[in-house]
Image (cartoon, rainbow, N blue to C red; front, side, top):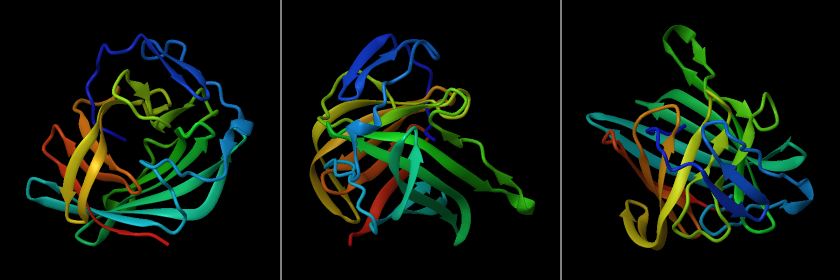
Length: 234
């Protein structure tokens, strides 16, 4: 989930290869048309490729605290709304201790747009408690899939990344498509920069997506910075 502030950018319409998505108010009319026959088996969008076996490692600094995130594109799939989704595992550790583990489900339509169909999230608390807030599945209890990366990214209108009322209400807007970013993993040109936020939380995140890799850097209004330190591809 992302950190965000309420906005008034809504009320626009985003046209995608899978139909038109109304972005009304918090609930107003968001119901993208999902045709399973319009989805492909692989996710090869240049800015959000999901090749099974790929492992990306990030370091996040927030004040004096540091955490490590490992994102693994698994070889598993999960069918959601009739669409076979790639399963991606995201693990966050602090001082070597596992704090969060999330399994996200992604699929790409034939126009190149990558969709997010849900997540199974677990946050490990003290005393053995487990928090599953943020878990959702498209097609269940009114939840709807959202767009992670358009097939042809261009600066413009905001779009929903996911929608499950009171659980996952993330939004994004492409700001630029030609930026250069340098992180421990290397220097990347022609990156897509997005502004991302949640209707449930305050603050925003800026993300940079590199061609052939995906997310390489994240900066939040709270001062947290996450950078890609390594990527292993099969």
